[in-house]
Length: 385
Image (tube, rainbow, N blue to C red):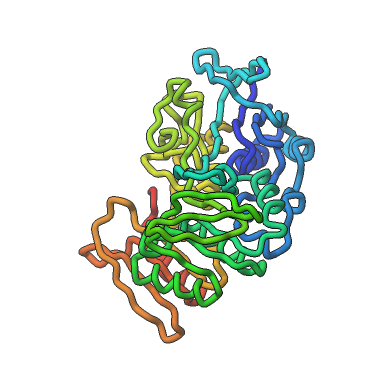
């Protein structure tokens, strides 16, 4: 019997891999198993879909049946994977069904990080991590005029900008002194925050939400550190994401921050691979679109018989905040060097992270032209050679 390639997950990683596999092999059996509804959509679009009037239904380009027909694959939607049995090369669903595989790809994604909150409204805090979450978010803010956002990371800032463009009052609560603290230096972060303020977004830095209480007339009271509080209609959390590793760990696979994988995307079991937000490749967890795309193309070739080591070129990230156009390419976590900032004649702000030899290892460009962004990108070394 010709066992299939089984892809666990129907997000951008899972379906991108299936699409790449089909480009190389039109007939190999492929099974997609997902706890979601199996719809095809682009997750990065969720953080700027509101102002454009996009609903969950219009973001989806195909349902599970459409995906199955499009990719020539079996799509098992609404199915929870209870366990993976590496010795038998099979996985067990909560329904009791067992599915054998010749190769298993864990494209499980990541879960939103939730901070502990007190109050009877803590359970009402929204997160948007998939299409179903976005549908709930759209329903919840239909009549909301005031939204409080927890977290000023990349996704939090994108949602804040989009919510403001939709006409709502928006405030962002962030413990750090400036937004995007893991990606940009203070000079750029403060200038970025100022542009968001000029667009009408209230930035509350150095503050943490402690409790969320329901108000008698509707909405919530959010108590912050410093014994201050704000009234709001909806609370959205965008603290960050944590790779889903529990299934892999229970199967005996090696996990760290993510599911540990080598440059072939292969885990500690040679028949199991990790892809996307759940994967830690050669020590790197990169929850962005371009790393996912490069990884899916390389893995597809490997699964079709051409072992292909993953290579990451320089991959700057364009932050979707029209009020403060920003491109970031953070330096490696262990890089030694310093940030150097300069202001352009056009009002742009360029920060370059250079080592002792003057080699550019990262940058943050606030404003600036596409040509300036491309020039900086060309100077960056590859992330993985």
